[in-house]
Length: 153
Picture 1 (tube, helix red, strand yellow):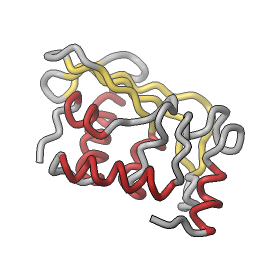
Picture 2: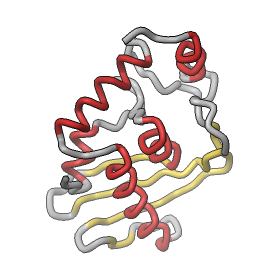
Picture 3: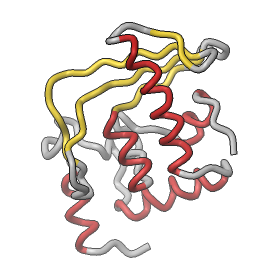
Picture 4: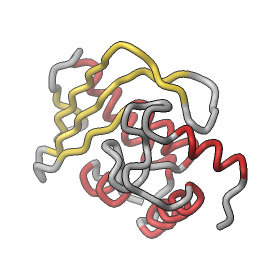
């Protein structure tokens, strides 16, 4: 897919030091449209939607928030810890609003696998289908999220 000038501007917001210290692209050299297209295809192969993935992430986050920074049992067999630090981050897609610097750690007690994501990750997935670039510190692999968080079509 050909990338527009608007997409170039959005992608420039994802570079290291603009919104976050390390950026949102990792070592991924693809253009933004190609990243979005590849992740959308992965989600479709799973029989899921970006909204369904984000909804499960948010449900676990909301359940874990009751722990006030301590791990808490959630949704039968998950352990969730929600922690926040001071500050907020903007959406690189120029979506209105600021997103708290909140970190969510989820451990699937049955499998022992873990996932870690942020409030901004949930927004980027739900609103934009963006899981961050390959090698990014907060890259969310759709397949991993589906497996660890037990998201089924």
